[in-house]
Amino acid sequence: MSTLLRNLAAYLRTAPNKADYHIINRADTGSEETAFVPLEPGFKPARIVEGDGTMRRMPVGSPKETRLTHFLDGIERMHIPCYRSIVPMVYAFTAAVVRRRNDDKKMATWKWDSNESIYIPDAYFDTSDMASRLSITLVNQDDDPESKPIEPNPALMIERCRKRAQKDRERLEHSLLETWAREFGGSDDDWLLLDGSLPYAEERYSNVVGLIKSHQTTYFQAKDQIEILSLAAGERSSIFKVERRGGTPPLTWYLRLRPNDGRDVFFGLIRLEIADAPGALDMVDEISRWILSERQPLSLPDGRWDRLLYPIRDCEQFLRSIAPSRIMMEAAMMGI
Image 1 (cartoon, rainbow, N blue to C red):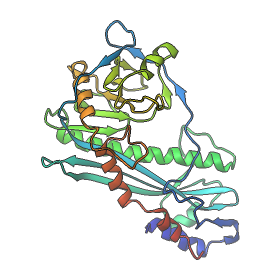
Image 2: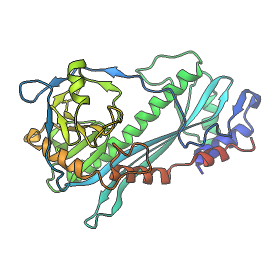
Image 3: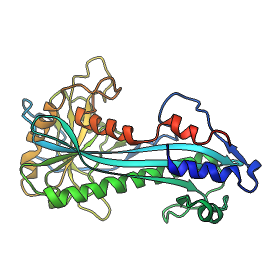
Image 4: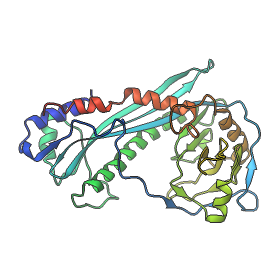
């Protein structure tokens, strides 16, 4: 059980103005994940850097034995243990892991890290009293320089906490990526597949591949988008770049993993990223063939099996095994 939540529960049992708190110790759903405000779709312009600058569909060839040896993924699990009036207090567990595939094809943990935090807006909680009495790790919801103070709207506060937890998870992932790159960066023998977008696209990450499974952001207008969504299994799009603030943009392209006949246009569609290092353009088709070879075994019964590669699912299973379950989180608040 989470030590942080136990400490919080101990504080709330004797908290001043205890009647102001609405304790939550029963779930409304059987899911391990809490439903939060969904991300809104967005658009960012992109520039095609292959051929004559036209969006095209290209076969990548037959699957090829993969050179991917390490896999990185992270998790964020959130829970609302209580409200004070209408202001939520949000608990978050974040973790990241690098798993390696050994010569015998078995997966093992290379390194992992985790963190627990409770997000509280200072304006509505006596955080100094809580921190001093029980050594609770507190993160002010309003101390992000990019955020403006908001009125006590529960949905908006929860969404702000979701974004803070996402950043905490990304920090753990980036730290592990840095550690891995110091040991294996630039190696021809060791390649890492990152579940998500590359945080850095420098040459020292020339043997890191980012895999994006969701498609919240669109990068092209209708004509080019039609080409992308018409990809057949084993085909990729033209290579393009999306400009970034304060960083070198990676090379990126779409790849269809599985036929989508009779299915949604996004079925089996992923986007891949690699650093724009010398020789990177020549590696795009080969890397795509590695990814095609990772389609087996299937990541069933996960509902994302069409885009979720089994080694990434293996990372997720490890992370879920170390994360506090919903039952554990609710049990910490029982009896208050």
